[in-house]
Length: 372
Image (tube, rainbow, N blue to C red; front, side, top):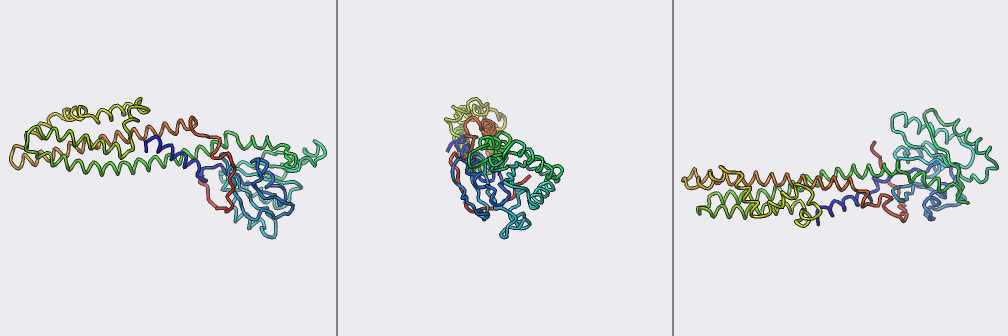
């Protein structure tokens, strides 16, 4: 697998991970139409609806575009008193809170607002979207204004929420609500998590590949050490070239760097030209010449009994180790540059509108805590 292909696969895997999606909690009064709103937003009947007040009995997650929408059970019921509901579902773990209502606010609604306001004061603010369903039942504009005044009067200090009027039965206000949640600020939440996770993946990739390359280096430094006591003058130079050539090829392979990539898509990187040059015999010979006196000492010193051969062996090992470490550093730097460019250009090839055009329902609700 090529270096770039591997990085793109890492990005796509991170993109599909549930932890990166922008999380929306749909909460509110039982029977207010939370599931109907989800169906209307997604454009498919994915959530079960009905006339009862306890249709949703567990949190159900739906993935749509870059969002994960969670339909939470209504609170204030025999099954879910508000205190137990708050403990079980912990709405502060979500990025956005949809509060859905269709009638007058209850004491539990006001208590929920107080909980969100208290959490926001800790510096963990979550956008609150107030959604009045069944707005077609309202007789006039004055009715809407009365509802607006009433709900804002009951919001605790410091808690701000945008009020939307919709009616799922007639699809009124749905497009406006959909545009509200598919905007750039919520998309940025998703992308920032992708980048953060990719940075961790990049560090792990470089760590494991460097470790693998150091193992390859160990193998070839031993060969170079043995070649240091080669009794045939001149033959050791040829053997060194072969050893270095194979060593560089092994290190390059450890980083999944292919020659065609160095000659093609990576040719603009200065390091790509350097890595390619060292994959040729001329390049290796030039490298050996750059060591100058050390190579001469190695070649001549071996003719001094015992001490000379030992010196030549040590020099052979040292030269190969220095060259190998330099090559590993260059490969790691190139890989890092490629990865940085991949994430910087992510919008150019990734579908940042979402991981799936088709909504996915995940029945089992898994509680997870978002990190601030």
